[in-house]
Length: 97
Image 1 (tube, rainbow, N blue to C red):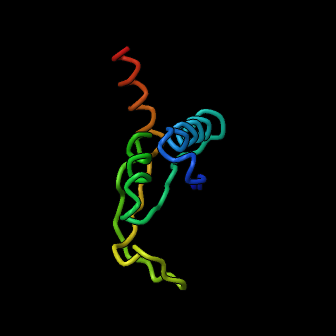
Image 2 (cartoon, one colour; image 1 turned 180 degrees about the vertical axis):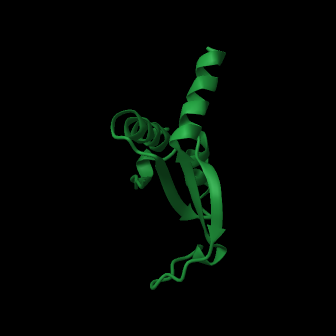
């Protein structure tokens, strides 16, 4: 999963809403078994989006990118959610309603 938003669109919940919709659609309609996303450790907003949509930290790693960008020296993270985790999260949410 990946997305890029123009800076004017940051902080409005669009990434969270779109990410949740993609995850839900993948599990509900397309038989997806696992959704994963990666970002740089320094991208706190992206980390927050992944956590809000129920993804869990899988690993932290340092990639050997051919073109270095500011912040990549801090490493990257992989987050993921499986179908089983998604189902369990939805059952918990439904029981709270």
